[in-house]
Image (cartoon, rainbow, N blue to C red; front, side, top):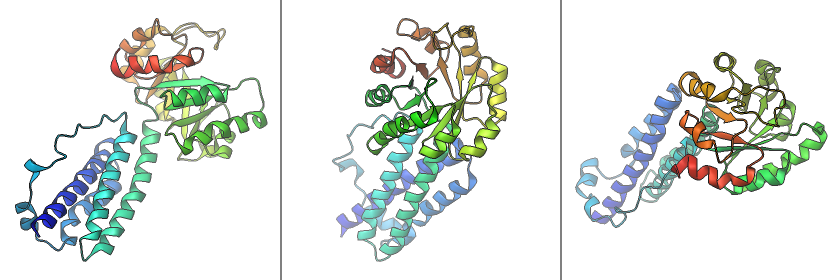
Length: 320
């Protein structure tokens, strides 16, 4: 019986640990009181659903002899991965507890609630932090974007300035299909209607487009990115309900002909003053990317050097 109690103790602790991480994300990152209380309620109520007294479970504890104690802690890339890992941890532990408790059906209800809450939390994080320490790849070629995702990029944009929406739509679906196997963000440039129609993650717009009008088209659960060229525009973006901004062009680039570069000063200002995540973009390559990162950017946008995703990611995530 002691071994069963040890199993119960280990899994109630695992479930509560996973739930506590989710709870703190909702409390301190998302500032969502309702989600915080829901997770807290599940966490506090767990031991009441078990047959064994709390003191008996603690007495059966044998953490010093746990064969899994020396496993390394996996490195998570961002809040979405942290959320997924801890929701999985909590749900798996709850599944074990179901099998060993007379009140297994009630524990099962909690497990399914965790599944639902994970989806809600991940969507909220997506809107608040679409990217972090990443390479944002932009292209009119679906094959380029697919290769970028497979090389490690977690945010890509289909930007096609030459074709109409009916031509762009199947391109979006081609890239979207990769979501069946890969976790990444797919953005379309200029066309909020296409973002809604293809049911992708969001749209990127320029200064000539009103974010409020775009929000009416795509809804509250999709991402709006907005091009900015100075800190005044960046501050305005936060007021208008934009989810992220691009900052640039840092240097002159043929993809933005006639647009004067903003230099590194704007990147430094955005890193300190912007309330929103930002992607530094424009004329960035492997020779100058370290300067952009040193200025405070954690995500860089690339067009012409999309084949170098792995090299950029090494620099961004490992400093190599």
